[in-house]
Length: 239
Image (cartoon, rainbow, N blue to C red; front, top):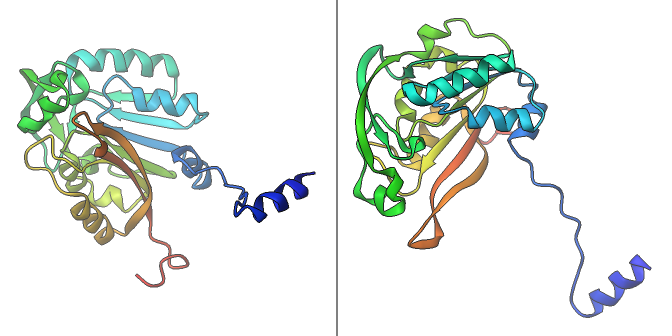
């Protein structure tokens, strides 16, 4: 019967093609045998909770500088048993700084906002500042071991995190970052600059997923999550 239906549809110019399930981050974790996730910019632990819900049972090491949201993160991490939370930010060098706390804490950033951020979401408006400590990933995890995925969601501060993780980056199996199409924060890089930076570090994009769309132009992306994989000579012989 299936073959009859397919032949009948082909006469009408219609073909049925089986589409494979689209690979996602969890599939990448499984394929690369990831057993450590370094979660930079953890907020209250949304990313870690998502991984747990999807079946990931490996170690999570989270970093979050904002005191109010860190308390929630710390509670979640303690209850988990295989999740460690650190109360500071990561950057290019060890220093103290200030972070702009937004009405919606997920928008909080060390970098100042562009006007377009509030047009996208009024909850992105900065309400106050908070002093924070910044450390280098290479100092915090000087000898990382295991199959590691680095996740960075720091509202425009991603490049600074990578600049403080030169040694650690060489140990990573993959890196996932939020990258801007429209710049909500001042001093951020463009997507092509991030791809070039990661290429120099030995990584190429593996997956790109939408994060959000512009409220005034719902067909246009604002940010994407880009998952980078380590270059493989078998796959990237032309590079």
